[in-house]
Image 1 (cartoon, rainbow, N blue to C red):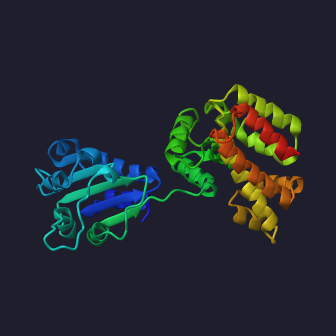
Image 2: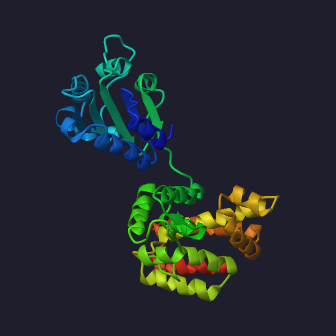
Image 3: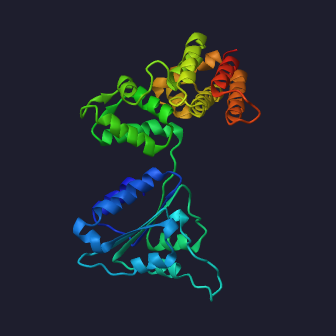
Length: 340
């Protein structure tokens, strides 16, 4: 089930006695847990029937004491364990003398309690008895991180759900600029939508005007300039980055350029170079295939491999390994090597 499917069931009052929300992408975990916290019980019911615990300050007995209570003047009570990855879950020894009270409860949960574990920034060990007990008695949801290539489509879906539109260039720029941290992307989109009318299309100009991305000097334009081997434009952009390091960190530039040239490498490998097939293989909107065609003409296979090697080298140097050059100097060195 997706996070949207789970929330749909919760809205329809179809509850499981236990939920384990885990995985590398915190956005979807937060989406479900926020709905549980704010919408399952009325304000009047929450006072006696909702308990919010935090992993670092919680132990097994606190969870059990809360979970074994019966609801007061309500059909259900909610126990929400946030940051559950920091909680001590207890022993799972096969020794019969070693009793795990939490495991006993998970195998026979109270049907009037909705117990939710938010296990963020990693996956719960699926080999554990605890995991298997929750899977059998309740519901396990893994919040997987999106691949970079999937983020533009996610942005388009998120915007459409809110009643707005966004064009392919705009969603691609946001994806390139913000990466695949969905919480950050959603936050920027929410702020952006405060400045546009329902039904209005979000375009590059709106993003540039409202999210602090320079109209001419950004990673997106840098990729285009490199693809065309426009040395003058590349140097103008790099000089701007050097003068505005907080808004244009080298780690962001290197990450985006690595994604860009990896797609150029894929272009060289793919035999069927029809627009639709290239878009599918590279994980991009067909609108952008022409940019990669241009870059592939500028950088043959061997040069593309060399550039990816340079990007890895300068990623290490940017962390201060075997280099005393500042980030501005490193960016200029790297651009020279890419272009020549």
